[in-house]
Length: 320
Image 1 (cartoon, rainbow, N blue to C red):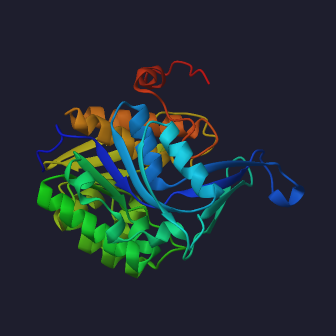
Image 2 (cartoon, one colour):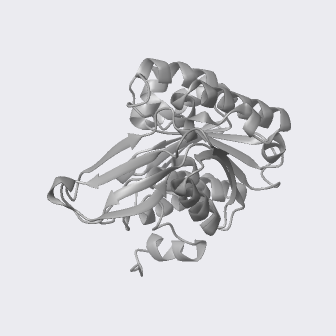
C-alpha cells in the first residue's frame, strides 16, 4: 500500500457529459419536461469528495460549445479544480436519463467519437498526478477509445512511479465493450491498483467466475489489488483489506434516483481513507454518502457535506 495519503488530494480523469433528464416520472413520449445538467463517473466522485472537504481535481476533454461550458462551470462551482481541455473538432457528449417508472431509469448515451473520448496523453499534466495523494480512475475510460486506454495506462504508470495511491472502479458499461474486452483490461490494470471497487457482477467479470461477495473481494486481492471493496447496492458492501474481511449493511432509504450512488460510495470510502480511518469507518461513510445520492434526483446533486453524515447514519430525518 502506498504511503502517499498525507499528501495532496484526489485527481480524477475521465469523460463528463451534458445530461438531459426528465423532471417527472413517465415516458418522454408523453411530453415530459426536461432538465439540463451534467454527469460523469469521475466528476461525480470529484464533486462528492469536494463536498466532504477533500481537495479534488478533474481532468477531461469537452467540446468548444455551450455544453462544454456547462460541464466546466458546474464542476468548478462545486470547488473542484477543473482541467478541461477544449476540443474544437468534436462536441461535448450527451447523456439522456428517462425516469420511466419509480423503479426504472433508462439511460442513453450520445458519446461515440465525441470530445470526452478524445483526451490524449499529451493533454495530461503529469505533475498533477505526481502531486496527488490518490489517482482515481474507472473502467469507463479505457472502454471509450484507444486514446483513453492509452491515457489510463499512462496515468497509472505516472502514479505508480510517484508512489501515488491508485484507486480503480471497475464500472462496467455493456454498451461500450464486451465482457471479454473488459476482463482483459481489468486483468491488466488491477495488479497496479491499491484500491479496487466494483459491484459483484463487475468483480465476476474481472475474475471470470461467480462467487459470494467476500470470495469475489478475495479474488480481486489475489489478482493483485492492494485492497478490494465490493459494492452491493441496497445490501451494503464488503471489503478485504490486509487479509481481513469487513461487511457493512446499507442504510434503509426510499431511493428516488440510484444513478451516481456507486460513485458517491467510492468518494465516501476514499475521503476516510485519506483521513487514515479504519476500514469499518470508511465503509460506514461510503454507504452513507451513497444513500444520500439516492435521495434526490440527479447524479450528484444530493451529495452531502461531512457535517450532514451523522444525521442519516443515525436515521435522523434529512432536510432537503
